[in-house]
Amino acid sequence: MIILMMSMSFIIMLISNIMMMLSIILSKKSFTDREKSSPFECGFDPKSLARIPFSLHFFLIAMIFLIFDVEIALIFPIIKLFKLVNFIIWMKISFFFIIVLLIGLYHEWNQNMLNWTN
Image 1 (cartoon, rainbow, N blue to C red):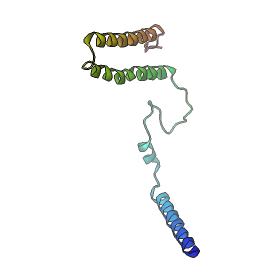
Image 2: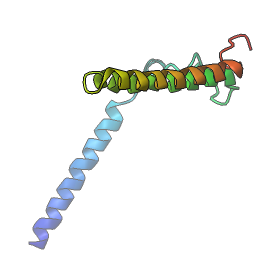
Image 3: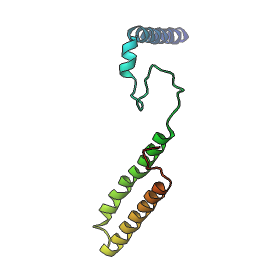
Image 4: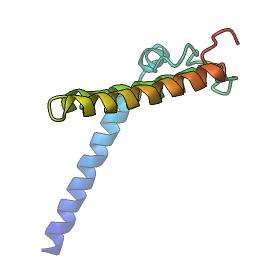
């Protein structure tokens, strides 16, 4: 019984090592393939040094986009809520939501985060 278990474990290890070696041999990529399969990141060259200065303005615009993009996920339940509640309650909820978004937009405008000419 022990001999059978040892032989099976040896066969399993042999097969797994063969498969790993085959994947290493067959998955060799050339330098041009690396560029094609790399993601396009904000106009940076994937072959250049990764520690180049990053535009803080781009980062702020990306954060503003993400924050205001979440509003879409919050608007969909409000649309479904229209059929479930009274129209006046629905208008109050929608108005409150729009006011919060407009206050956030005004704050970002006031902080000059929407100014592209920095």
